[in-house]
Image 1 (cartoon, rainbow, N blue to C red):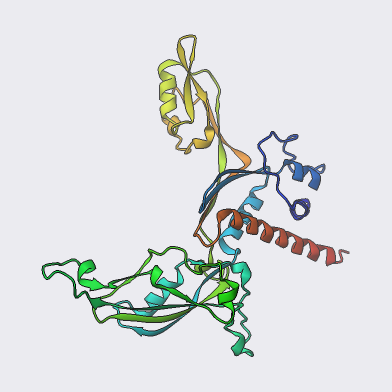
Image 2 (cartoon, rainbow, N blue to C red; image 1 turned 180 degrees about the vertical axis):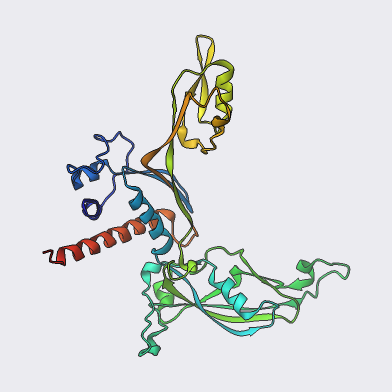
Length: 341
């Protein structure tokens, strides 16, 4: 319960690289939320347009795993929910085509939309500018009149023979054209292949995108990958020199072990255990396995978050923290409102 209160009160994580004040408090009775706030830390290692690597330190594994599951299943996005196929003369079945369209990531800020109402008593409110994005796909394949007679390349013989995600167009509903005047709503990537057509075949489709979360369907998940691992810990129990040091270096991933020149002799030294792939190759060498201690830092989690492109990864991490804080607060409110006899 102290952990839940600490998370709720820890509104802003401190990102820095200094040493921690004090030791990890563990689970003794002296641990309070102030101690947690001072010891908990997030270090950002890499941040690109679609990838974020960061470390969570001084946190329990249950909290780290809850954070990962929230990233996968409880951060909302917009995705194609309904597909109205007016014409499909391609070789792809309607249900397969609808499923392919549903998995295309749609670039739209989900926090500007509301969840669609499931109340059957008001069907006219099902589609509106505040809960739905409308897209269309209308394309037809024709012969290229300028193609060479000797050509056998479909790219040259036919026009629109490949249907890509860039062929999907946004149709504003209500005042969406004014509200999202600076936003380019549509597929995140414009080179996703949807179907192959031949002359005379065409697609005429209307799609509705709604707001949802990953636990309802995987198409709403905002991340391609969200995973974590414990920081490897490698300790040399004895000095390793010469040929043994060379073999020791080869047992680990590049950059983990380096050789130093000490009095004309090469001595092995652990430089960066973070790069270790945990292959345990060292255990194959009888003369080396007893001089190295392999382990993991139990409260140091290395996270990898890869966004599908709908939202930047740093925004996804921030929203996941907000969801976790809301869950903790809701649980604490339930506990406080319950009379314990």
